[in-house]
Image (cartoon, rainbow, N blue to C red; front, side):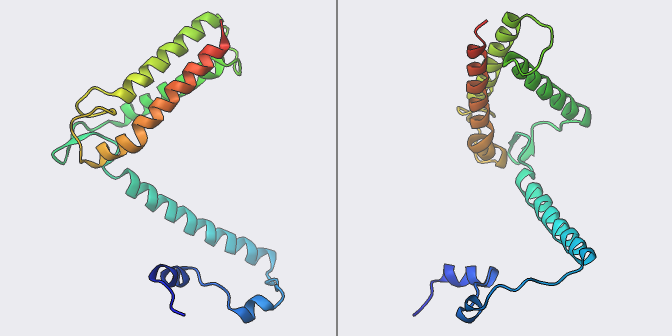
Length: 171
């Protein structure tokens, strides 16, 4: 019986046990606790390295809009940190609106701020009609592809979620 190319490639990466190996009772490997810790450290290092490489490939030139192969701007470290802080504040707003966090702010203010946040996220998903959003004109770059497949849908789902939290708070 002939195996397909896909099956033969899969067997090279992750060999399946032979019939004789499957028939044998499972045998535990004898390791000292120190050897087990060393093995876990080795596996962790391999997994961390693979994840680091995958993230580098995924985000390489995909985080900033570009036109004709050139980024439209180069975000500074301070700007990146500021965006992170704003995102944390938005998460706190939604948590407070959903009554998971008490900030001492009137519930109706939290509700309206959450609706404003939802509108902002929806506006980001729709875009500015040139470089970002579902209706962008400039396509074909790595950022444009990621924006269409990941960034804009995430903004749309976040807008929906934030609006639902604000609506449920009912203040």
